[in-house]
Length: 217
Length: 217
Image (cartoon, rainbow over all chains, first blue to last red; front, side, top):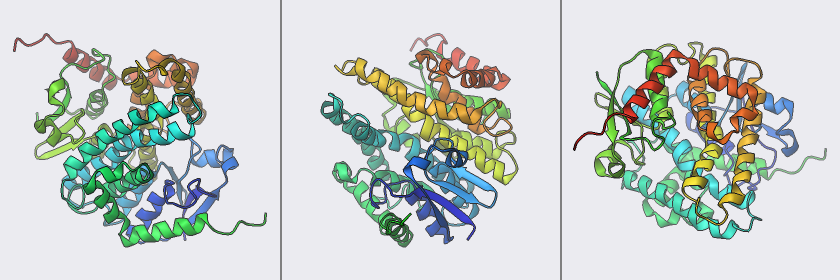
């Protein structure tokens, strides 16, 4: 087993699959490549050994022999680039699928992450409660546009691609907010992603990892 | 001239180069490819003709014959993928450069954009003034990590790449906040990017475009 990814030693979500290693596990399952997992303890995230692998002290990282990568988007792209099935072979369809990868991470995910930033970094501030509806409305704006584009298609641009893998992963983070359920076609789109056997395997693997017995050390 | 990009008819920044078409112009200048520009008026951004090109009603888009792309990161990648010089040829160095592209857009840009969101979308809220130092501190956290990784190198991973092009473009948005000047090596890094002849040409082109005489219509 030559590929090693890193993940939280214990994900803050307790194994609900919302940490970014799940995206990379999913991509590896889609292409059928085995991998090992390096757990990173909370206090080790900002230490030199981990920062050498990830300059921003986050997870996941990806190691394959002498190559070390960070950023889940880049890792998913690397996996898709080296194995068939996650990106179309036709050059124009491939370029469009890559547009959706960037759209998931740079246009759709930031307002969604604002919800978490507001809860976990500004949750004690006096404005916390009054601000949340504004954040939700910005998320709704993006979802409305995405829902309009998706329409009644199964996936964003023809066959399932790495663009869908990332978009579904980003939208999953919204489930507890209730916002996803306001858009029936997006909720069904996410459910289609979750129903893929590769997603199921990735989800079960991260859940088993995050609920494994504590080591004695 | 077969490549057409879209840009604001008049950029809200008045031609300071902060709109995302500048990144795409820069990439096209680096590889020496001519392009035309389709101006999109503010009221046309959310109309069907533009939404067909960009599902989120933003700029830039990229058209080349029958291919239409959106998301500046995806467009810069497409340009780098099809022409020499913006991504290394060695596969591992190329994968690392792509990590920096995603890092610029998914890890460094979101907290920087929060500054603009706070000013332009929540500027009238009672918490606007009290929140800004918290946002700045989150930006500083990222800059500290980026500065530590860059050290005294010229570029993030060896030769100048599309990763540097996007990172410099993202950091440029910070100039008016004063935060960039707190990190001397990052300020010098951005200055190195701006000194590249291709950046100068891209900057001048967008300035000329955004300050062109109003048409009579």
